[in-house]
Amino acid sequence: MNKFLTMSLWSIVIVAVLVLVALKFTVLDTKEQSLGKAFNLQPGKVSIQSSDPNEVSLDGIVIHIRSDAYKILKADFGLKMKNAKDQKALKENMPAVRSAILQHISSTDATKIHTPKGKEALKGELIDLLEEKFGFEIETLFFKNFILAPRDEGGI
Image 1: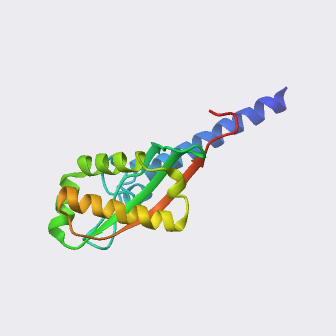
Image 2: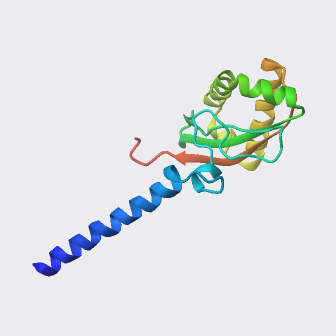
Image 3: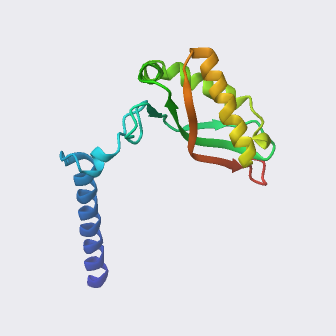
């Protein structure tokens, strides 16, 4: 019984130390090199700072996708604008931009975008959509992450 009690106490101590270390790196550290400062975790903001002033990383998009084979799409992507004016306009119109992207992707059949060729076509469609709707001049759109989650066999 004493051995069990001793192991339990040590487990609690180890967990407490891990929590303190995690807090140190994510919340309490005020240095610029800290892990908490390396990534901007504010909602609706740039996820990872880019060295290119005309590049904007959008927050991840998670959406139920129209497909018999797939259930959910999660995509993280960025846009490289042709000029600083459009980069600023993109940031100022971010909610409307995200809404337009979500509406377009939700109406897209996932079987058309699960291949590399389909992803390239989707990039072109999104660039055309944003340029037409908002008047942006977009150099490129790139996916940082693109995951299609398959439907399970149980139909859930």
